[in-house]
Image (tube, rainbow, N blue to C red; front, top):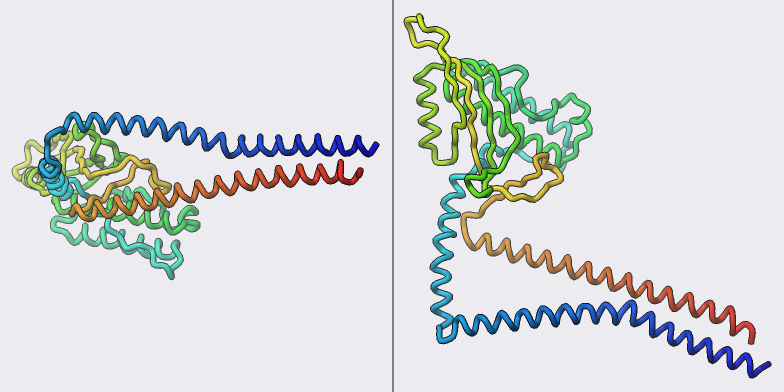
Length: 334
């Protein structure tokens, strides 16, 4: 009987050792072998590419190649810097962010009333005065709405940015001497295929009354502006043909502005696009790229550490369970 227990004990220990080796292989070595195979494939690809570069640039000086490459890149950087001032709308979105020590809904109510009142005063003090549509097409909730009373800080910042943009557009229409703006519609932002989807277009539809002289000045001002403007459609009607003075025309037009953009969804962007703030210096873009690379490397390192901790936790749970079962089943019998 004693011999039997020892035999069973040896068999169980042998099975436990085999199971332990199998678990280590499955949860550790198999993944390491997969990573090793991937690294071998990547190494062969790099070696092939390096051989191609040796054949292509055999007998050339690296300094000359680098100088030629920089000569091609720098004009492109200069062109991007020059166009960054042309495709921009940053001043239209300028707003005062929510301070840290202020409740967002109260700050939103105060800023909303101030910005809207400043716009109304500006329109009526202008000569000639401009009648704006009622209610104002601001595209943001009113301060007394339920949505505004429970707004977060990010929502308030987004609404204030949209509010200032709409008010800036209406100030532009007031400066164009529009006597009456009967309708104003803000279209959803869209990409521009003619610019290879590098910019996003913001289009507004305007129905107004103004004189021919003011209309021509407005169109000429947009044509000679130092940033992007485009009149996509224009309809002019004269309903006062017999009047002896300069008549008020009924004008319907579509006006577009543009800025650089990046197709990355944002939590607080309803259009699903995010405007790219282009730096005016190449050093700024390089430092931003380096910072982004560092953040990505830290994120990957953290994910790798989390996976390793989870794997070690699973292995320790397996061995602890096996050891408890072994003590309860066989050691207690002996």
